[in-house]
Length: 199
Image (cartoon, rainbow, N blue to C red; front, side, top):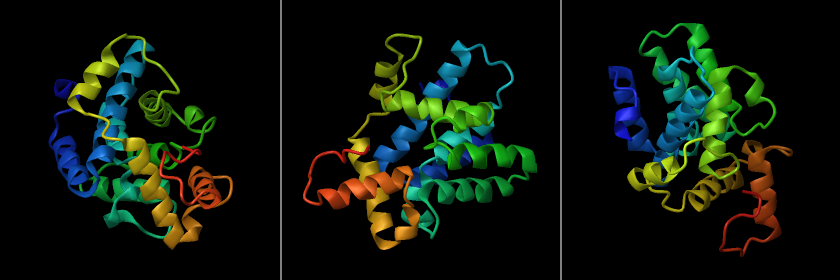
């Protein structure tokens, strides 16, 4: 699977950066998201997708859950801002950075991300494949991906990180948002030791 990852200096630096700041289950999920996004784009014969931008969007899409990027905004926005700050070091043009920012900021927004261009569409689709709400055309691919980048209970890790951040900064989980739904479910049953039912 590693041979399917872009190998530029920027993407290698992005891998090192995100691996250093994210919990391992989140990092593995981010790499799987890219692999599923790329496979989905290939199956749809998407010819003009910017794979480097797609990779950065997928890799950073949950970076807002990291302590380093735990700011005042929703985790999606914090991750989007972190990606753009990273890309500025490489002199990316505004349009490319905007596509990455939008993909990350909208990845929990069904019906919107899908209509905002290929980077946002395939980032969201990669997330959906990883969480079982969309499927791949190639049978067996997901099993091979998970063998190299195991799940490690990512659903519980991700929901816990999002909820814990929002409990300290309620503005990070506005009503009607996915973080808001996670927090509401937690508050309804704070003793629940299983998966957050809003996940």
